[in-house]
Length: 460
Ligand code: PA5
Image (cartoon, rainbow, N blue to C red; front, side, top):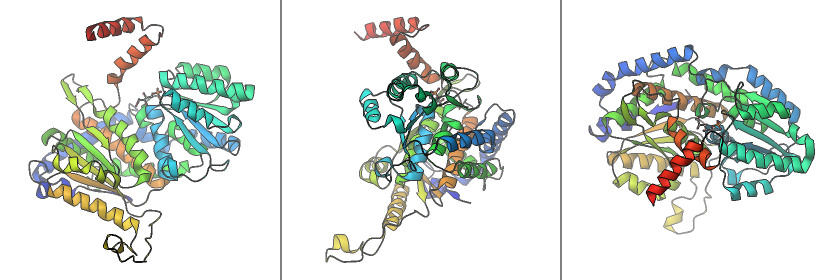
């Protein structure tokens, strides 16, 4: 297996019965895990949820590869306009496969840059536009709903920039990813003749990285999307297994369920020890937060459930967060993300300086230091009764990233089943959106403008 899950340090024998899981407790919850698997499998077979099928969809891959083959070599920048689930997957992939953004290799027509315009900070957008050459930029606008305020407004600015610089040919430099049968973005794409790719209706934004949402930007910058999907398909096989020793998504979901509901662990720290996995931690943060933070169960019972995800980077955050993690409230579970074989070992020169603070490091390497730092932090947390587990990827490559995306999506879906909530909606973000529409004068949202005014009056 190419990804391992080690939950030893979640056990009561390592961190005590107040904070850890006993063998009896885990055994007693086995039935819950298997029924979560069965109910999710049934719903997936009935096509209620579509993300498990994405690794097997061949038509969209062909469409994307045909389009990519036609445009490749004509741009040095792919500018993605999208937000949330329409942006974070592409960022995680780019960070994973080409390294963190500030230290990526030089960009060229052969190795195009990926610029992701998610936030509507005008200073950020203006700087990004200034950094792009309109003749060498391909714009990809992504919105499942086709009407997200941030995406629509940024797209109006970016497309205006493109048309004003290169004229009507701009239409051939814009591609759209959206729902097939609805939304103003789809209407615009048809009207303007933009190349258009669809994502299935039963795949929600934060579960869509392996649809055209993530695959199109990935293919355009040159990633092997077949290998990405191959990794995900391999993980599918494990995630549908009712053998808990094989099904790490189900085992991990069960551990988190017990820690959250029986051991008061409302916070999860996702702690990659790899800068390449840093983008993935932000992708995971959205997946876990938006899917599992819910007011009600499916039966309508008010529960206000959820586990707050925090992204931390090892070893960097040992010098920023670990003091709190060690001595602050014992309300967290730590998920370390380790890599068995990094693509570089970072050899440290053997030359000694006659200074103890340097000399013990001479002749060793950074990969060993990073690994020791993670294991040391795990041991220290465990000694302090702080439950922690470790996901180990054999390598960070396209295959393992595909596996990891699918593992985390299944884990999230299984935990949603165990909590008996709908992990696939996001009602909680609607009210803020409606207030914004009201404030920005969108037709049909006048009532929200009035309601917002009442809120402001109350503040005064
Ligand atoms: O997971 C979700 O559904 C959301 O976070 C969306 O990804 C996000 O709101 C962006 O939506 P859209 O793709 O419609 O612009």
